[in-house]
Image (cartoon, rainbow, N blue to C red; front, top):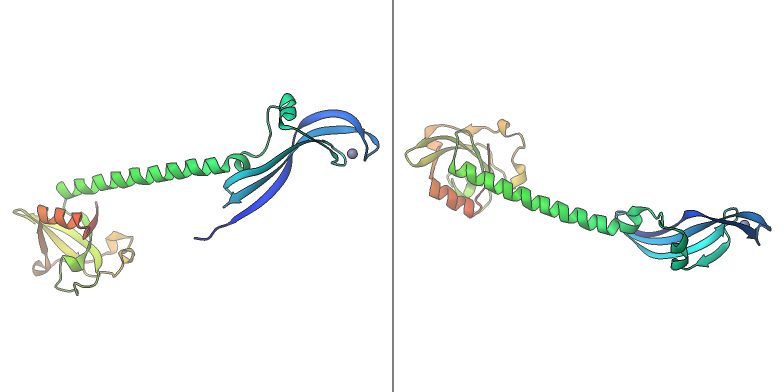
Length: 212
Ligand SMILES: [Zn+2]
């Protein structure tokens, strides 16, 4: 992860103040109340103000005099500093809380669904597993062989699985389009597992997902 951070500043006009004689312009000009603010940001969104100075300045040349915050508040209600600069830090914190809560919620939902698939199985359910730990016939059990098993039927207390004909050393190797995966369906290659065995494999994370 790399950081994009920086500082910046700007002047916002909070409103009109008075007409008065500007010593620089040597004329009667419009004076506005302004705020010069500086901010710090991380990835642009996480942002907070590092300084604010209130002033009444000539609209034409920009010269004027600083005023205090309380003097500013006597005549103006709003600072008009962009919300993202002033409250970006709070917005990003709330966003983070929301995203984390949502991630926890969806992973709980997904875990509940996987449990339901495990206890109420249907033919054609697809189990994601480290196949090397289940069917050692074709794999060296010391390495990972991530792949899928398709539930093809039941016999007594056994769930019968056809094993994918290709496995991968990383989980992400498994094709996203599950329908493209081919299975070895001849009888002597079928793997039979009881429900307690499947639950045990799930608890030890050897079976790590089930899709329907
Ligand atoms: Zn001026």
